[in-house]
Image 1: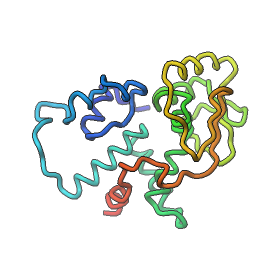
Image 2: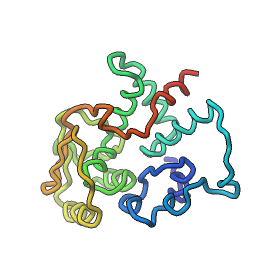
Image 3: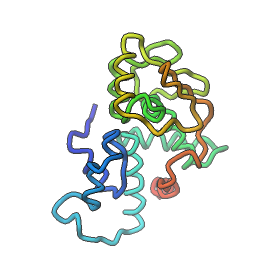
Image 4: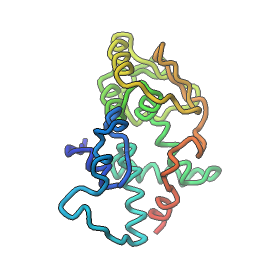
Length: 207
């Protein structure tokens, strides 16, 4: 599988916003974008006027990197979102990515970042309805229960103690004491990141 091996802080700086790719570090003064709020590279501080296409592209790249997806994965999510006629395409796109297993594990507070969530899942530490799942992109349904393998509970509790979270969003139930999480409903738009402009992503793919 393709992997991004460079500094993830460069991604935040290039997108001009925090993507929270390094867990609890992103909430401290050590965060790279707090110290250098301009793109990386020799010409990073030069202001450039962006075209309409560039604006749409940057928004798509920002959201793709935020959720840690490859280009083909992101495109498949968009294609699936377009088939859901009862929900706006942009909102459905975000819902599909929010209800991924790796994202739910992160957003619930079990792990400080999506990258660490993917690692735990791939190594078999996470279960869904009591069955081990090693697919980070596993799409959770309403009511399914995410928990931690008994042999891995001490590891996850240590992560929680070292990286306290701001609390789970209201569309999910998170019992961090017993290491259990479940999706209660599909996230509404007001429950999601308000800085994301999904309309620009829809326009990008509709060209």
